[in-house]
Length: 195
Image (tube, rainbow, N blue to C red; front, top):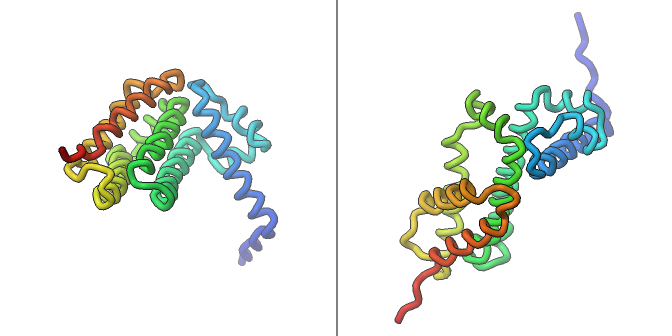
């Protein structure tokens, strides 16, 4: 009878967690650079680990891209909660749109791999859309209650408009245009003052 291996010492577990977090953060920055040919070796080097450590955490490029995607979605969720806790809903929504734009830019360097991950079913496109719509819905609901966002808008339409803006102005060099377009969207979401 083979005895199970003892659990690794706490220090190694903590180091493994730090390595994983560093790899995800480094990959996010690398994918955001606009370079569509980011190598896994450069990500490992940037994270200060060997390529073997990267492969222990993420055996394939697709696994790394999926982890970056989920990390970014969680950051969008956390960002929404944090922004709504300290800002009026309309201000919070506009700041969150900037977070969303950063998330979209991060996807550019991994777009080809992300398509493979989506086609494999590991990430569902409908899930991506639902996450975005739910986030926008939180802002619209809070803004409607506070009176600083229109109550007659559908979060699905706002989410689709956000996606459309980033489809036409989502490249890193189009940041200024995307910012102007997001400002226009915000203007459309504010209630019309009573005459």
